[in-house]
Image 1: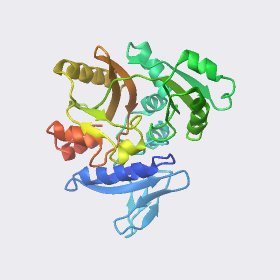
Image 2: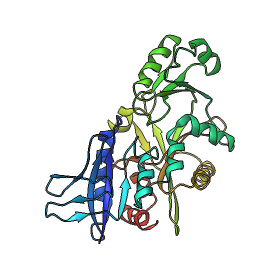
Image 3: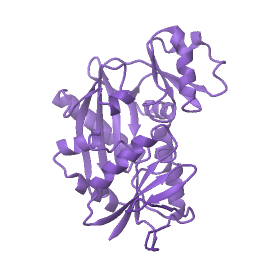
Length: 325
């Protein structure tokens, strides 16, 4: 039997979310086919979590660890579910490439590109995909860009968010000029660069997709409805949201969104499960929000919901991804 390591943790504010995703993935993987360990990575420690609850230090030279019986384990495949650095920005993927370890996500370039929202948006715009106007404020240069410059370019309301990372932490919907500078300071606590992005009003939806060498699946679309200012941490993880799968949009728009999702997947050269978030504005215009290459995988996350709505068995999906490289 192959040994699968579920890679979780990380150093971002979404560490605990990653640990919950790992529990979900562990429950989804077919135990008749695979032996599964969770491995928690942070900047300070790399540890495999053993069945008895004890932990075993991971050797960073070859990603091996020792079981309670003294057996040395080197996983056959790593399923990465770190939300944020180092699992979603290409760093961990580069390490696995160097040691010859197969893994569940896209490669270094795709991960780095999709992790930086400002770079991604400008790249996707060059390909004809609609995205909101935005500007970047680098750390140390926050006083070189005046509030007036930002408001003249982007306007109000707008979103201020870390350029790299998730949208759960450090993101503010700014409605007044006085709130702009505190929002920038908050975002800088989560990352080195801040993106200020124009507001787009409309219907928020999200669409999952995964492909292997032998199969391709674009999943049903989920509509995201929240009374919060945006799809923030409380909406995502504390139930302050209504998630409707399939989304209440026309068949024609559904087909357009799914086609666009599949096209973006292929253009970038993705692997494994990704989830693309969109805003549908007036005239059924499809606007890209962000691309998630390690989407949440708790039992109630979007992807498991969409897999169920597609009539697929999530155990088979996990097996497809593990065996697909």
